[in-house]
Length: 194
Image 1 (tube, rainbow, N blue to C red):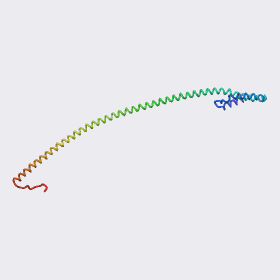
Image 2: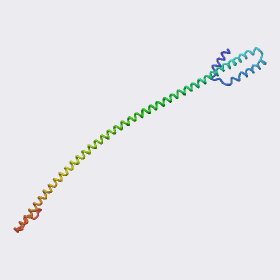
Image 3: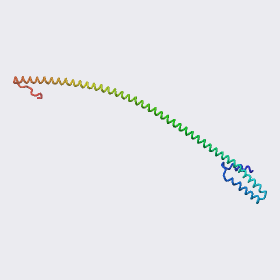
Image 4: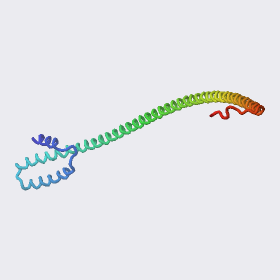
């Protein structure tokens, strides 16, 4: 029965043993010594079995301390392993981030190169169109100058014709005036508006 109680106590006790049980055996020994003097011998045996159960608990608590120490070591090793794993994860994360950054930078460079080549091609096309427009403009300007010169020539011809007609009419008018003076007659039409 003492073994069952000890097992129950072990099952109920937490993983880490409390520090108080170490002084307890000394007190129980002093109590046992006092009880020996006061208590008759038949009653001593049940107290001793209880004391033995308590004494049995103390040696069992000692391995718990060792297992607690190994548990602490296991916990420390687990923490070290966790830190190691976290550092590997952090290194992997940094590596992946730098890979992603480099990849994005490479793609940006490719896009920028593509943009620059397209811009250069469009600017060359624009310059070519501008040159063509300048050439057409010069051709049109030459045509317009030629047309202006032709118009000016035609205007000069028309002026010459008008001047010739005016000169003829002036001569005719002078001849008629001389004729009327010579004959002494007056002209029938003084003014063209009457």
